[in-house]
Image (cartoon, rainbow, N blue to C red):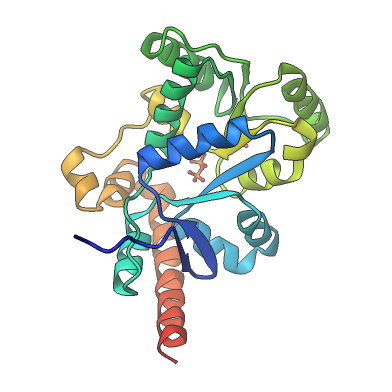
Length: 251
Ligand code: UDP
């Protein structure tokens, strides 16, 4: 029998919850029921690199109650360092699974983010997939700075059980970290481009590419102009961080 894997794995100074998708969903449901306010975050290459130069993002991530990995390179690094993470829990799969659980349990999510037509389409798609889903509300992700407190109040008044925010990283994590207590939502999470995928605007990589950890290549092929420079810079920065971590772990 395989030995039990540790429940937490620390990589790049981030304590990651070593859970499967099913365990994550159960943990979220328990968090929603325990009377507290909880934030979930996914770590991937992008976030680990941004955390190096953005102390507010680092603090926000470290303050989260549930941290999972959405990014094959981070899984590879966990294996390299002999503290393997069980499973990659992709943001979009988690978002969909959580909407299913909300429908089953009568929990009310609020969707915040993406362009108006995208979030509207996401609502339609989710209602078709989960007819019992009862949304607390939804709103697009574009607003002026002086509208922020009104948005926070609207969410608070809607009294959702879950807030899924899709305005890109690190904006969504910082917004949630700043306002979660005020909004008083039991469980908040950033879901990045998940509404675009659910609405069918962004296609996901085929299963075989996902299995080989090549989702990034598929995304690069879809949006080469926007992504190539970002991937190149981030990957070089990530390699430097892996090297630093490697040396720290050996000494
Ligand atoms: N988005 C938004 N408001 C903004 C910026 C972005 O709602 O001010 C949405 C955008 O429409 C998309 C999602 O955030 O649906 C993810 O954006 P992006 O791909 O830029 O984020 P990344 O995945 O690069 O962090």
